[in-house]
Length: 404
Image 1 (cartoon, rainbow, N blue to C red):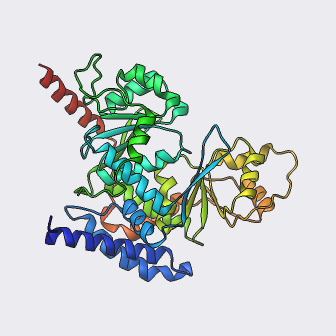
Image 2 (cartoon, helix red, strand yellow; image 1 turned 90 degrees about the vertical axis):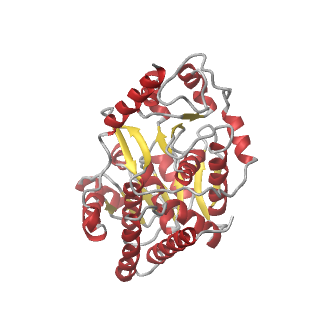
Image 3 (tube, rainbow, N blue to C red; image 1 turned 180 degrees about the vertical axis):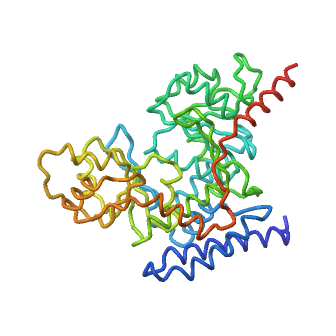
């Protein structure tokens, strides 16, 4: 197929955006970024208003897979094993493309706008890869933490998030099977029917991974994404349906990346924050993401000692582990920066300063508000879609009409 002028221009715009972002985030010292940031946002804010927009995180991963293919991008640990899995940027890009090809292939046949419920642990590499695959294909990523898994929770999400496909691992397969009857295959939108006439049989987790391993490592289908298209959907703690658009997701990723690299661009960031948006932000400035659970302060500092982690980003609960330690010993590590998306008390900050000689940066909320006004002046109304229930009701009415 001969590329059209519009297609060539779109690729040129994407390349320009990614190159300018990489130049900004890799510039040093940090104070020298202002001019480059202005150039980047001038192009970025223009393309946000266009019919199609850049999928910023996927485009950066693609760029780094070419420029730095052998650089580690993701360190993950299996919960039942101490062995770690480190993927390079090239491997992250190729494996996410393979999953994208499987999900949009003949067996799953998922289309742009379909929603995928992903029930996988936060520290599992496939969770990251599936999210990238969803972004590449225009699918809606719907995360569900296995630690909070219940049969009612699965059924609620399938119905209220308008789920088309459920993906989980072998640990939770039976519960998912019981709730969906035919798990890991496209579902009728929002409706679960026992004895469905679907020709697709249940597919196991191992089958999904095997199919991905045999799939093409390049995703070549053209996806027309616009700023208002849904990228992520989930239930809040208050059981409200929250939806993030492509524009909102990209904005949050960029602001988070700028905050984490405000003082110095980290090399290996331990992201203990369980928010999916935050956890992928380090990739925007070419850093490696370290993802692992820690039961207590000792295991946490043992990990910091054994790996070249120079930045630590965690919620308040992880910092409060220090309060339970009776004797504060000196812990050897390579830490250079500490971050928290939540406010940390002055006393707790003082304890960490005494132990690590580092200050905890917990000014994300203020930085986020300031960055929105400074870098996204035309998007001051941008916010998550909390009114998804109206869309849900419309979908249910359409389904009822089809049945009648």
